[in-house]
Length: 219
Image (cartoon, rainbow, N blue to C red; front, side):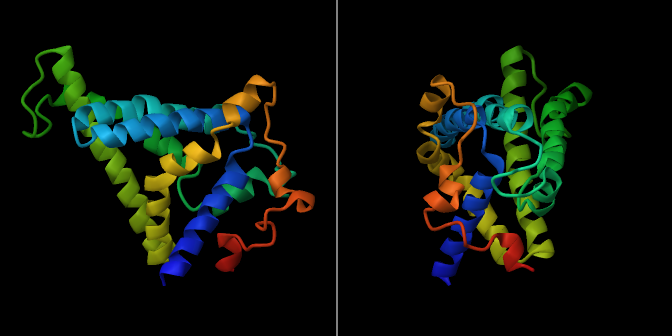
């Protein structure tokens, strides 16, 4: 059971990398995101407010900017898949779902202007510092809620294991991305805008090319 769980985790990670991380800019931004997320993880036990601010303002914005603005959205010749196909089979948040999540995040501070107490949960903010600390708390809830919502959603549209594996992947992505994309900034400085994808080429395979994707496993 544990072996199968780890295998599913590896496949989800591999599908995510090969389908959605072709741009060296995107990879470099993921490296920055990973570093800041690890900082946020540590500060979660020191000052959750700082963790929430760093997690959203640095980690999430850099991460999603790479996907929205720098990752190619056309036909994927390396994997021989259309962008629409990849979006359809995406296990986690595809671009459409990310738009919804990021919109909720961006608009959530407005509730403190409508109700400074947030239905009695907060003391009304009296300064910019108070406001930002309360916003950070809301953002922590938005982040945790987004993670739990998609996890439970996957329980119903896939199965419990897929949902739990995806949640594990998301929580451990900073550690994985740090190692996976550590060389991306250097490649970018050399003028390499796109990952050549040699590790996806059958002539340079690392043993992944013939392994089934999650879509094929659920076919």
